[in-house]
Length: 333
Image (cartoon, rainbow, N blue to C red; front, side):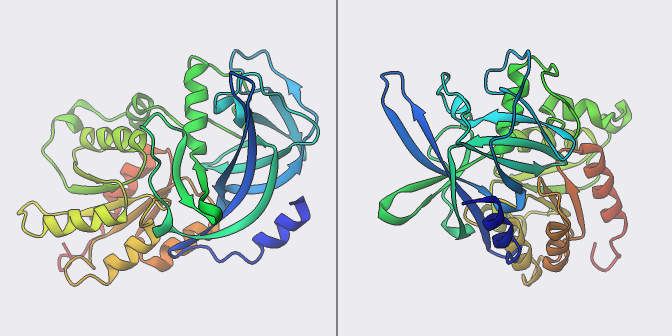
């Protein structure tokens, strides 16, 4: 799949709903015993700016082996990530015949080295299975495809966060235009709330929906420190169940914060179902997503969202949460 084919394909993408597009790519890893294993992987097209041939790489004096260097794209320096090394092949090297997927999310940009890109695949969120691994995995889901093979969806945000942790919170690569996501403790410090905020009684009950444990843990603590009580769910299916359970709870739910990309039921579909719900259709919804494009924000508004915050700006999330709650009419409160 070449650059021009990718550009032509993304022109026809209709973002939103229960279906999304993945760009498929291959990675060939060498195991410790010398065996070579080729796997099929994917990333949401909404996060991909372009696919390019392997550019000239400028080495960095970094201790993080998965970051071989930086490259220049139209005058902008961008760090490169060797995905084979991320997945355990510590001897993997970038070669001229490989390709680079330039991705952008959460207002960050990075290039991911792959062996080859294959096609764009249209996928229903309900067909995305949770990864069959623990929380330390860099996979966010998997799909059973032809010939009983699995395609694994990589969690690019977590990959970058892990690389930052390996660098000892240092700066082994340019921070602009790509800045690393914050660790949970950084999220809490960044919000800079006062002691009074931390001691006040709950000012609202939030349903926080995200399939990332890292995001759940960090944002939940930040919201609690800002005076909110928090209920969590890992996807839209769990969120609807949590809302049904809250119908008999005198505390109830005051507002929802949801990710977009989640296995089984995505945030767009969940919000549309919420707007059709006989009891919870009035609940305000804020999208909290790594997708920073205008198409994502427009689709969120069409689905019925009351606000949109790009990860990982916790101060903006708390401010949006308070603003949306303050704008609720007495009839819907």
